[in-house]
Image 1 (spheres, rainbow, N blue to C red):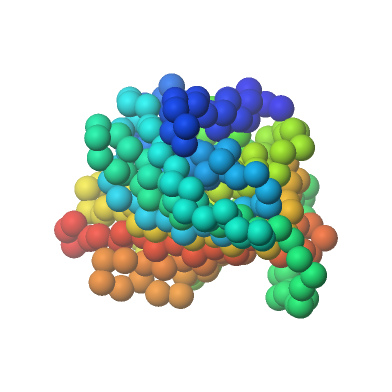
Image 2: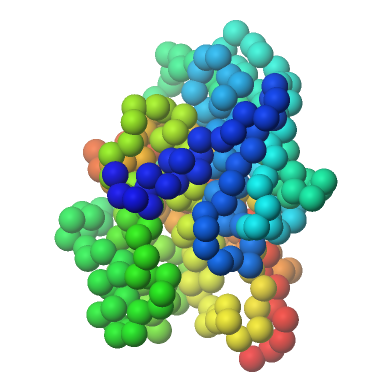
Length: 283
């Protein structure tokens, strides 16, 4: 396990404050706001800590306010329902006395089922694609400090990287993702790591057709809501194909969809995210 992944696992090991109340901390790095994937993953961990049977099969959530990366986050869990096969939890993430994030998660004991799924796209394998740092260094030469750090999630982009001027301006993106090291055999932890990783690239599909620069003051983007459906048991420390697209952006919001496939072709997770796509000034 890399140091970055070890730190992420530690970040997901929430402190128990009281019954149904947990506290999450932040990485020691400068950010304007808390990374949404971190909040979602910690909220799912808080929900899962109160569930006695079943695995997470879905989560539906809203990002309400930007998170403050200098202040711990409290996660309050409401045990809405404990059924025989389904368990439902609501989690509210709180900072400075206000809700910043709201999640409803459902857990289910697997049953005998109807079976079908879409086919995984044919793409190059992850081992044939250079790590992200090498790709960026090769194309741009000068590498931003962010790319020089260790990261808990290894990302291998298929085709051009999202920041490349050579990329085709089409509303889709495919990449392989994997935790950077071996994780313990804890299904909830694997689901939380995948939840963390899912917010790293999904928004890029919305931006792909557009010439947007985040640092010139002309655009404001942020995740508004995030929904995931976990179809099968999965391992976050094995390669997953992240197949994403964006069917529409309009009215200051863009929609992105994503599917995670294992290398054997099994569809593991489906997700949808809507993001704020606010143009602050033309040009």
